[in-house]
Length: 256
Image (cartoon, rainbow, N blue to C red):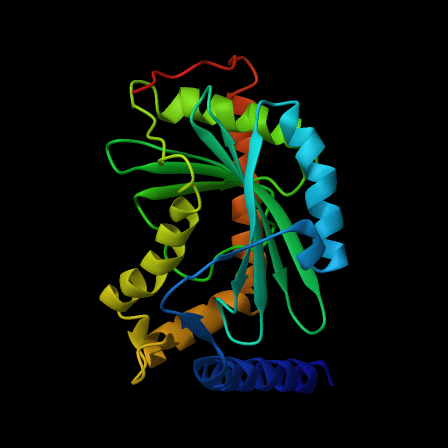
């Protein structure tokens, strides 16, 4: 009896690992360009506007000023993205409140990021969703979904800068062009994954589509048991980071 259950479970899991890449390959597409349109709070959906308003006051206490809310449209098929951008001109750090809406759910996370003249970027966010593709070596991201306050997340970001970016020179985008930082990340996504064989540009050059390699590897990382192992490893790695910084203070970096 138990042998039959295990055989059935293995067969189901095998079928799932065979079918999911097919569905993912034809369903998932990533925008080749990002053309954010500035939007007032009144022009944003109520849920998005309420989140932006609540975070704006919190970020202001940390020295961040709003540099605009943006409607980024569909960055992936069947989604709609909004971004509120903030800048701390004393430290050259940026904050982004990112909202991804679908027909059924809305995901929101806060990210602090600092770019450097050597081309590196270090980002700290509250996003619980792990990427399904290899990380960008020039864009190092730390995820702490358990940190709910902007102040707590920013303290960790500054500590990570002190740990990994000592001696690097922060780089500020020109005033009024702060959103270009976000655009660069989005528009580098497709070409970078095309170079490693995960994606290819569509015939109309508007989207990046998954290759069979990309669809299979992304699907398998998303499915059980790999998804559980990845989540546990991520939590462990971030817990080690927090423990290693318990004795560290927030250190100011050099400015260009």
